[in-house]
Image 1 (cartoon, rainbow, N blue to C red):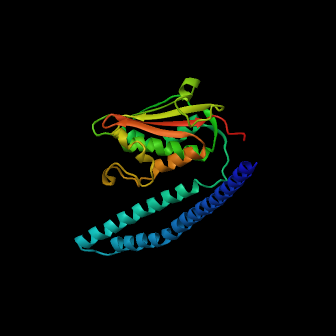
Image 2: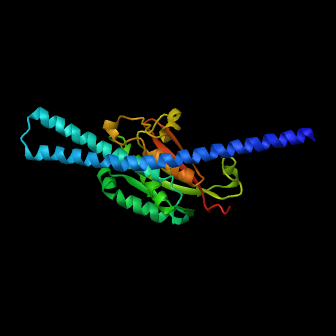
Image 3: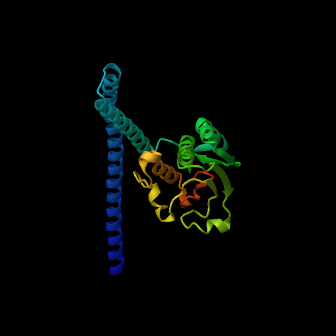
Length: 267
């Protein structure tokens, strides 16, 4: 009886500690989201002024060649900063809990995304194969952002002299495939969406790092970007209780795998 009482006391103490830790974590997350949102908005105003006055200098005054070169560098740097702030703002928005899952037709979403990239697809002469995709319970705007980032990633890292190929496919995960992913709920149904390309690829040892925010494997001057796109993809997948991982080989392309539940959790 004494042991039982002591055990109960320990359980209650531990439960209280966990509740307090959870409260601190929630407050911290809320503070971080608010900071990211306010900082992003407040930073944009001085940047707009920098761009405005710098453009005025370039357009209205005959600057010496060296001064013009520096002014153009200021413009380039401010444009990069605007893009970085925009991506950080989008990243912070993904933590908002106000968005609710609904029926999302991934075929329609993929069609819209490919339409957005129509000009780039034509310029790069990309061969696109998009197989039938499922309809699932998800937040449509986040699914659009997910496919937009992953397809854009494939179009960015193409190889010179090689005709780009983009393949989008999907499959229902059976019991045998489910056993490969211990993180999945065995009582739910899942689909796997795959986005494959024949671009520059990457070393498999970096497969986990590419989903970290600000993580880049390639020279920004060659491929652009801020190292946020794939981190946003991972956060979207986490919001939907799914999995995302990538496989690749240098100069042979990359394959991104997205595993999502077909139905929202009723609990």
